[in-house]
Amino acid sequence: MTRELSFVTGLGRLRLGWSAEGICLLRFVEVPGPDEAATAPDWVQEALRRLLAHLGGQPQDLRALPVDLSGLTPFQRRVAEVLRATRPGETLTYGDVALLAGRPGAARAVGQAVKANPILILVPCHRVVAANGPGGWSAFGTPERKARLLALEDPKAC
Image (cartoon, helix red, strand yellow):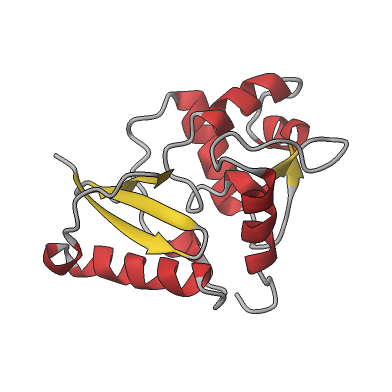
């Protein structure tokens, strides 16, 4: 069973969902959803505090926050693990991720896995760029949002 809450940041409204295993959903949304922050477990409240600090301009290393990848296919899970292992501020091309995921030449499959990512920011798909530049960003709505998330990451601070 998962529970959800929504919250507003300078980048937009986010919906966060969690299971007993970890955070399983973090998406930008337009419509407010449930707000269970006050009744959320302590670890979810800590994750929310760190996310708000990070998105408010106080860089946080979010890799230690627990995520639940059980809803992903094995390949999507491997891509998520590769992305979670990247350092704040580091970018990889789709081809780099494919290679690190053990599937050289599967850059398009990586693109599909990134597009299906349900846990934005914590599975940092914003760090994946096209070989010739930043590329698009369907999950976040705009390339500007991707650029802002990358700008928030200060590797020296994490």
